[in-house]
Length: 173
Image 1 (tube, rainbow, N blue to C red):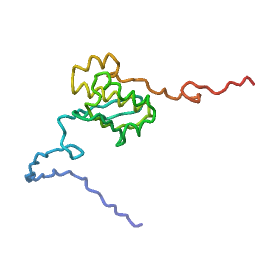
Image 2: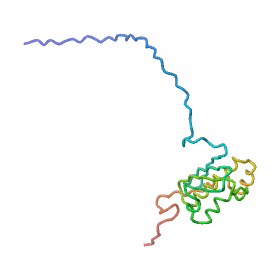
Image 3: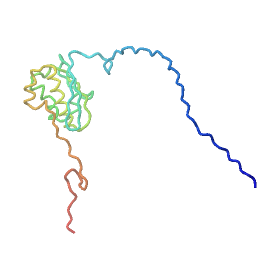
Image 4: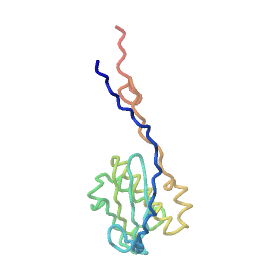
């Protein structure tokens, strides 16, 4: 019979790795970057910016001092944007209360929600911007409730129901 020759494996031994010293690489020093406003325009010292919220609507309001009283919403005049007079009245409430109608131009960007939510958000933003401009308005605006955010939101839909609380019609048989 032929004898089979088996190779015997040698046990492995670990050898220590020799680490080379890391070469020093000079990193360039970052220069300070001069930041500008996002729009590229310089900020005006007579401009006061505030954010207003109501329901799902968010309004970014710019109050420009020494203005003519023009109100622009999403690049449209207030008369073009809001058709109902009651909505226009709500937007102008903080200005009427503080006797500042015609003294400021207002530019508002608003998104989300419906018309009534957007109206309340713009009113909230205008009131906050007026307080930034003049702290003496704070007491009367707070008393009228224009500075507090209306936290009422739409209630979520529940399972088994058609809406938040509306149930399907009950059938006896």
